[in-house]
Length: 176
Image 1 (cartoon, rainbow, N blue to C red):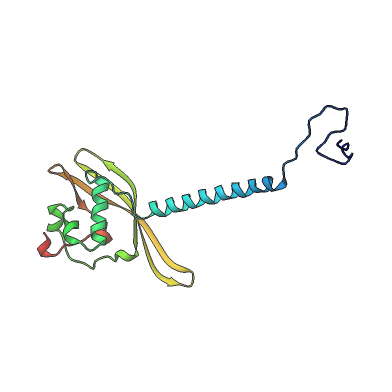
Image 2: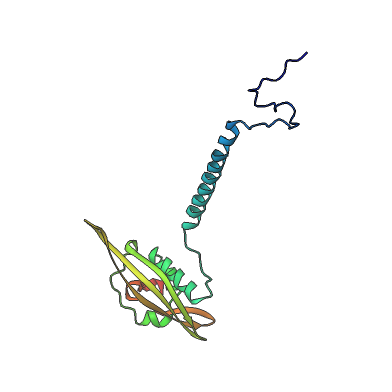
């Protein structure tokens, strides 16, 4: 015959109460839940960091058929020193008034699109131009200002008729 349950046995109810035994989950299962949540958070942070790093590289290329897209491509070509490509975005009148001056230094400029005002045959693209110089005791010095590219529609395509002075290129004679 089985011996009666001991009064200190937690899995067996006292006699005569008709209750099912209560099973207490082990503490190890409860301890795994915070680790699982922490793991999910770490994975989400890594995915977010990777997506930011991937999308942070190059700016989105705007449509070349828009005034802002023409300015973006002109500036990119000028910054890269590709005068022939940059010249393709200029009107013939710009060449006629062109007087060579010191080429801007692209390695210390940041150009940001502010707005575009498009009309039927002309447009203005406002930009913010920031220049950085030196490495003084408090970091690089920065100055910025806003300026406007003026564009006209020529043969169905947008062309730059004037550019901010520090973004103006004067292509070599062979580039025209």
